[in-house]
Length: 526
Image 1 (cartoon, one colour):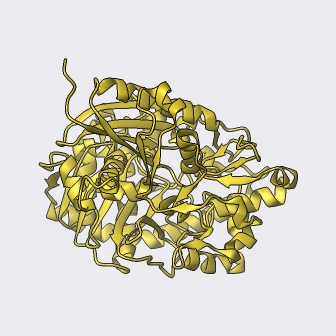
Image 2 (image 1 turned 45 degrees about the horizontal axis):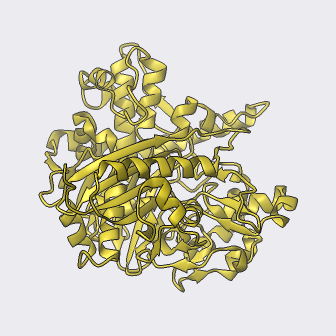
């Protein structure tokens, strides 16, 4: 068989999942390869991955994609990685720590201290990153307090993207998007912040230099041989997965927001310059020098419904790790009337990064009565997640106007998820069930970086020329009105349940972090 036309290879490296996808320049997906890595929990709240296991999975995924091109030219490799991870390296660039994932919560005390002292406001103003246990800033504060000898042996502190770039190209660098997600970077002056570095207990010399997201490095000969690509293949350093999901969902206009829903849920839009909100809710990180992504991630997305399935309907299991919308489970909810007959779920069984006031509010079912069935409980979980994201959209709209929303992510394969989310948002909605939106964003940024597309919007259109990934979702006016009324009651319900959580915390002896441990291990790892 003769080789097809040229392709660009996108690699999206998440916390435990590596997805490599080859996109033909005429807009067809040639191959997608997924690899999984184990998430380790050596102590309560610690969620780590072995760095070299992630790298090995990345190389395996790249190799499978390269083989599937059947000799077609690979014009570049473009990278997307999860932000918020942290690795310590010694002087030989060997890891001295595991990779602390963005879900690792050991630094919750440091985050609370920043908030209670008021320092979090200045950190957020400078960095665009809220003080949260998932941020590298808080992780570094934890190491300074609890592992001083390890800190002394650490020559470099790097993120997931930085370590991957080093292994692929030999260069130890980071890029603007990843740097702007650390909490250590002054997004206004485009440099590491001396004031925040002092809080973290590190020096600028321990952090890698910051490149533009469109910078191009070269694949090393050793890696090229191992994955079946020519030595010197261009490697576009790319951006963080959040900003690239905004690009991949075509939410690259300040009036358009993108909602992605997998284990977690996120809502983002693109603005022309760093924009920081006074409530310390939203993260503002770079896509490029003049495109900044403003958004928030809620720790409770479709994983809440998977939890409901584990707990309430084990006879309707998920079929795979990416199956956020098990049809049999959601059929129980579809047979239930909208509003779940007065049952409301506050979906907070684990930490929620859209709310900065602590380790996250208590999850609860409210209004539970004898006639409520499993279907009511599952539907209330779906509605609770969507209402939560609707609240985030409302807060985002206070900063920048949002006239329409694009939905993407594996959960939106389900008509129920689409219908409820569209009714809660109550605005023009486009939906896609594609789960590789970050990979599409990385490929589009890669085309722009190597000069094969004049701009980002054109790059997305080139890779998805007919918009086949999305379709309009009809908003049910009656359903929208019902959810609008419910949303007005949620702040009061959260306040009441939050007080109940405080009472339970005070009574707990010994203390158990039920906000993290309430979900099965595979759900928490998401």
